[in-house]
Image 1 (cartoon, helix red, strand yellow):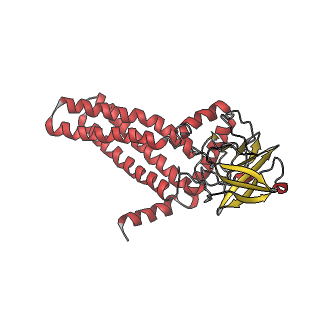
Image 2 (cartoon, rainbow, N blue to C red):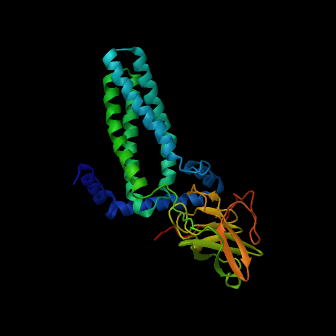
Image 3 (cartoon, rainbow, N blue to C red):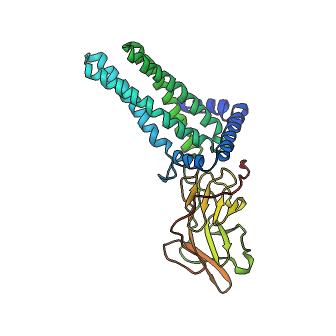
Length: 321
């Protein structure tokens, strides 16, 4: 067994199970509840921090700025010690300062994501945040030492901080690649042509209905004369949208309250940053048929050029399976 595998097993036993994992999940759920209770403006701000407008999570983008500034700052610190060049010392000070300032919005984005973390990854996310907090403290102390012209203390404080941020970055990668945090969980049906999924009479009005097509789950919803079809598995963490709540043409996931417009699958509110797969719908010989959306208008489905950000649905159950 390699050292990395042994370290992963130790982390799994420390933070991936037991009391730490449960407390981390409880804190995450508490933050989520408070965010939802704070109102529409707070939720729109959270959408920005989640990265809804980017189409993928914002936090990893900001971490590049923070870690990049800190790493380059340490490099110029070493260069300044070797050469004694004042320009290297000034560069180090500026980069460490920049990295430390950029850590503030980076932490806010991370906190927003933590409030809607998958339950099985809550312990890892909490440990990731704690390690980053220690790293931030070290680099902030390094900035203070630089103002006092104590270059030796500034360097070693930055070095310690870099160690904590590196360990935290390893945990962050583990969350993405092993726990699938921040990736698209939606399922796209493997259909090349129209496929019948149920009879028209079976689909009740204003009722979320999940059907299977192309070995994937599809969400159907009849709204008067219109029928909408999007992926039934939430793109954020795999929640069952058919168990969610509806407001007008929007469906809210029961797990972390992502909201999607069923007319086109687009995200109305995060934490999801990925749109749901969209399907064309038609009725033929009493059967409801679907196929992957290709941009053409079909009978039974209305294309929406815009969608409402004024969703006012109730907060659903925050527990996921």
